Amino acid sequence: MNLTAILQYYSTDGVVTRARQAPELFAQLPTEISALCKIVQGLLIHMWWAQSYGVTHSQDRKAEVNLRFICKQLQKIQQLDNKPLTEPRCAEKRLIGNCRDFSTMLAAMLRFQGVAARARCGFARYFSAG
Image (cartoon, rainbow, N blue to C red; front, side, top):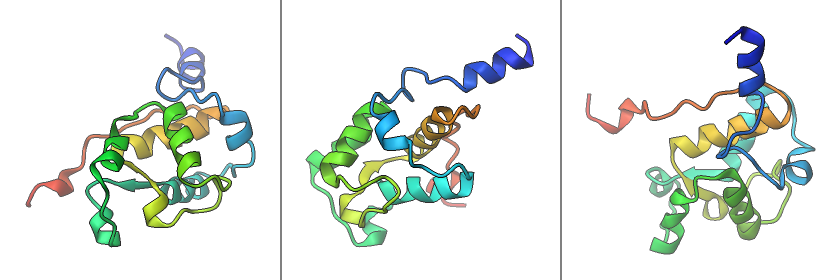
């Protein structure tokens, strides 16, 4: 596979990063990666870090970590708080996720903008002592 084909592949939505709502929700997003990262952090809360924010979630809310698909996550984000995605949610109104969800949300935003992006996650050594 040549470089052009690889970049095209990673610039196109996949099954997980496809968001039917993207045109209306993603159209107003900034293009700077640092700004997009800040937006993602204002939409999601890591299931293992919620208590650090003083938030305790019900079992029903904790099940949000299993939504996996960006289209389902965006629906839940809008259900919890229908402000534009550029406005951070309070910790209680953020979608509960894990490292996978942070990376796939950012990849979906970048791919919407035509940027080649690959989600990488699952390397969180901070969960183990040492």
